[in-house]
Image 1 (tube, rainbow, N blue to C red):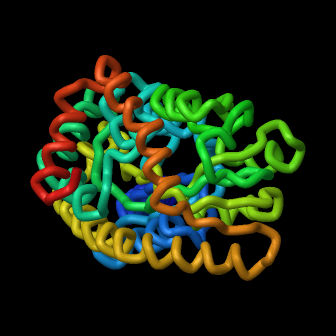
Image 2: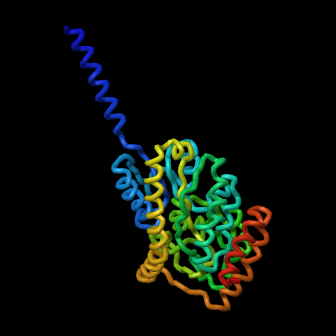
Image 3: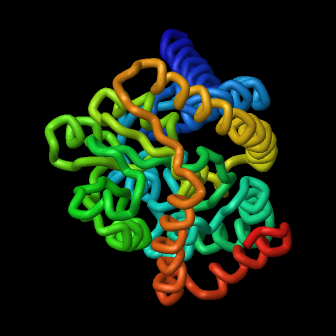
Length: 334
């Protein structure tokens, strides 16, 4: 009788353990390199909230902000290996991965307006670019906007000649390298989490960022001058590990896709207002002089930087560049 009771108890414990295991939530580790109060940081938190609500707790999203889990040089490899399930890297990160077409987003003056940008990211061009990631064990879910970039340094940057000899931090992108060289600067590739210290110690003289990234990383504390140039664009791709994503139950995947669509609308809605607010906060500190290019200066920058598009055709693909310029022309932009 004792043996029978013991067997029954073990079986019951096993059943309870199995039920508990079956009810354990699916964990999505979502890593990114900016602070939680940036547009991307806020959108990641919104996705967590929406995903957990939509799946009734069957999914738990753990958000790791500000490079607390992986730096930007490490995170893509971690995603491919399955150590993390979701990322939102800047679009420049896919060039070094071997999908050079994504570097089209780095081209100076390729997006004259947000309307052109959204026609690209929400249309066939954006979908075709995402399709190129699948061979890398990556699935693209959404494009998140983070706005146009400004230049900063410890000297005024008004004319192209002002860049001569400056060490300017860039992401790892051949396009951004060519951009800085066209301006006469010396590009320096650095991880985003290392930029503040590099600026503080003089390892680099300046950098480019949307205002929200510059302000939330306190770069304005170590940059005396900021130029509102809107010369380039910075956006993100929300991506997942392909094996993880395709292995999810179909209903869970559908619910997460819905949560992603809603958080993407939120991300793109707040991007401009967050950048505008950040620029005002930079001005309010009084530590950084903010300058807006006049028409003559804009024309000089454009004349200097537009040839980068032609120079990068062999790397990115003339067809991709032409397709975006066609969208721009269709909306009456030159």
